Image 1 (cartoon, rainbow, N blue to C red):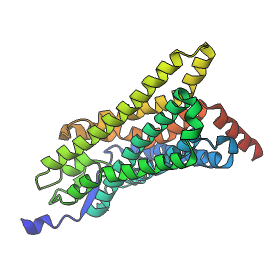
Image 2 (image 1 turned 135 degrees about the horizontal axis):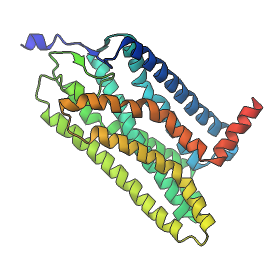
Image 3 (image 1 turned 60 degrees about the vertical axis):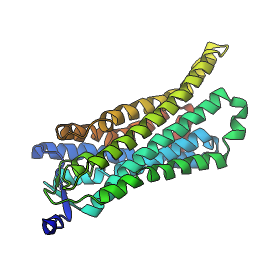
Length: 307
């Protein structure tokens, strides 16, 4: 038995089992959305970099968020596109585990960045006189580095434990990327402890980050309500609306996907829902930020007219 367990060195990603005509249609749609997301997020990074008027903490965080939204779908979408053209996509066990780690680490980093951006809005609205002295370039860079380093360190223990799992067949992953649930269901060794570790890690990160964001916005709302003029209230709320929308979309899909038992009956549902954060939100988030921000829209129009 031990000899057979060592035979599994490659997994095959099942992807979506649809008709050939639907596969080509999905391929075109997802490819267009993916390219649009890369283009839009890259443009935001460039515009924030070029225009001096956007050299502010809020836009710095938006550009970092856009940088993340370039890499997050790149971990999984190329494999999804390939699986739509091929019946099965082969991937080595090591690459599969690495893909799992990168995907979830970037997801955790996004959690932390949303907290940082909520703190930035709290300082701007609730502590406007101290904002310029606290949110310096050095502090902003440290916050971003902390989010990225913390995101990749958070899943290190899970990575170590999943690397110890024995896979002895079958070797077909019922997904278009190496997600935790379908991957762990292929393990031959006892994975109950790993599943608990994964659920606790995801649950704590999501709950703690969401509570910190909720705390920031509770202070923001309290400050907005005591502003003397309705125009001041509207302006203050307007600066937070984009971030709050992104937060609700992110935590809505994340909670549905990961804060649930990893039952085999849920695998197909998770596979379908995972398309939204992997494909749609990376192009939706920058649109939400730019459409509700006059300074960014003004910079975009100036760039278009100069071109």
